[in-house]
Amino acid sequence: MAAGAAGLALTPETRTLAPAERPRYHTQQIKAPTEGRASFIGALVGGFIAFAALAFFMSLAPTFLSGPLHHPSHALAGSVAFLVFAAAVAAQVLPARFGRQTLIS
Image: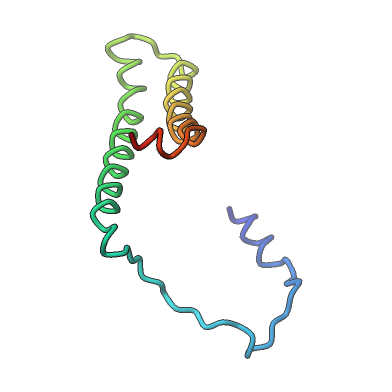
C-alpha cells in the first residue's frame, strides 16, 4: 500500500482546472421518496440480513470444516467460500434475465 500511495503521489496531474471551474464539495443526503420509503426500508433490512448471514456463514465455515468434520484442507475451505460467493453473484445476475413482471408476480 505504501508503494501504491507513493506512486499515486508522484503521478503528475494531466488536467488543470482554474479555481473558478472547480465545483464546491458538499455532502449529499440519502433521500427516498415518501411513497417508496417503505419499500426502500424493507430492501435495506433484507440486504442487511443477507450480508449478515453471509458474513456469519463465511466466518464459521472453515472452523466447522476443520473441527467437527476433520477436513483441515485450506483448498476445501477456499472452495466453500468460492461456492458461496459464486451463488451470491448468480442470485444477483440471473434474475436480470427475467422480465420485471416475472420477478414481481
